[in-house]
Amino acid sequence: DAKTTQPPSMDCAEGRAANLPCNHSTISGNEYVYWYRQIHSQGPQYIIHGLKNNETNEMASLIITEDRKSSTLILPHATLRDTAVYYCIVISRGSARQLTFGSGTQLTVLP
Amino acid sequence: GAVVSQHPSWVICKSGTSVKIECRSLDFQATTMFWYRQFPKQSLMLMATSNEGSKATYEQGVEKDKFLINHASLTLSTLTVTSAHPEDSSFYICSAKAVDGANYGYTFGSGTRLTVV
Image 1 (tube, one colour):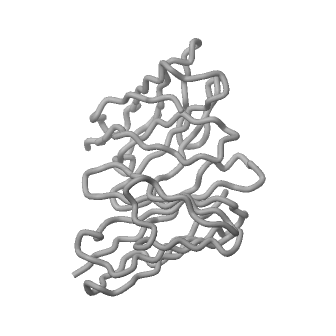
Image 2 (cartoon, each protein chain N blue to C red):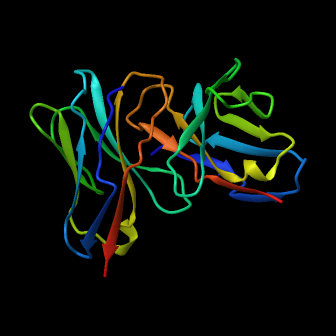
């Protein structure tokens, strides 16, 4: 599976959009980009995933560059409850393999 | 959406005793479940892959005789920490992927905080 690179930490003001970048320059054609987040002392929570098109759901938007080498997770109106570690993971959709977690980005939403 | 229930959410046990953690997929079937361990301020590290009806596959460095995994049905996997020691104190998390490849991705349990005293 492709390796991902994320900034270790980011701050965002409450009510503003949080934009979390992820580099995955070695991604292959059949690999999806998944985003999860982990609030302190809880299990990871699925946010969104995509292959090449931009995706949006009730939680967030995922913007994938045309060359698929990077993506951005957007939380449109961050709240204090969005403070968490955000993980960007690349994996083949049909794979039975586990998710491999990097160090993620600690997002802190400030009041 | 898919829900994975993990129980207990926290447990304190004495050194030398065994602790069982359950992981259940509530509304889908999972032939494969994964067990992770997370130490403070660290990321999740895969311990083992649990396969329904067969032996678990352990990651390098994880003692299979100490961390017993049973996946007897399509909805239940258990992790037993045998002869627990203080260094086994950690946050244990399970995850599962739906059998039918539904758009659930990987779903995680809420985790179990194990403290060995």
